[in-house]
Length: 334
Ligand SMILES: N[C@@H](CCC(=O)N[C@@H](CS)C(=O)NCC(=O)O)C(=O)O
Figure (cartoon, rainbow, N blue to C red):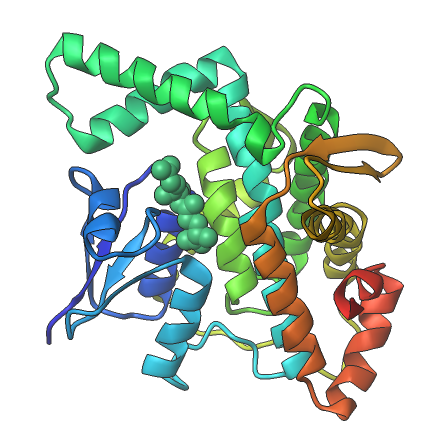
């Protein structure tokens, strides 16, 4: 059987997210973490981001969310990461997006703000590309990569002003997920969903970079162990939560947090783009937050809104009260 080829590298959250999905789904693949995987995207005429997945028939695609859904179509019914219940499936999409687009701010902030993390990330990234690079070139590449990433911090909202919001949000996610995984192995039951993998990607990096790793080990050891299990969950055979039962309070708390942080940001981001404003400004949990508008994240909001709008009335009748109770409905109803 011709395997998939996953072009990515270890320090990349979306790459390890896809790798964990492939492993859980037992799809044969080669982890091609060598050289410059981004060049594979550029050469294929794709957006210049990693990972890139090469299908057994030679097709190449990137962007982990559409990729995960493409794999569902390609391999339907077997070890799916989309919950069977459409209400849970929508909430899983929402929490995956929260992981990909909001928790990533935590990943980027810790990695490029603290000196110990910057030093470690430079070494991890440079040696992933070429472990035996001659010292002068290695030093130059480390510095160049550092400067490039630090130069991008403001663009993605990692500023001094936003720091307390981002760091408090990290602690909230850790504390809540820690309580959750002590009672329920994964977000939607005893098998992992797309939401688990979205959070996994970012949190896995946060569990390696030194400052957020220390925080995670000190306050959320069960999250740390959950990440280790999810890295290769190919042996897990579980079940989804009972759709007729109330959601675990910890899941509701995560959704409420999303309704207080990420969704208001998405709505303000869309408004700023529509108004041609130079800055997105809003209050998040009573504190001022600002960053440049981000076009990709407007697409994320649009995709979630369209997904909800396409759901049958009987599904919305069960979903909307959950979204309302957690403060997510206003942002998603548009
Ligand atoms: N939405 C994309 C994001 C992928 C992404 O941003 N990847 C990062 C690395 S983790 C990247 O390639 N950034 C471009 C760069 O640094 O040049 C996904 O889910 O795959």
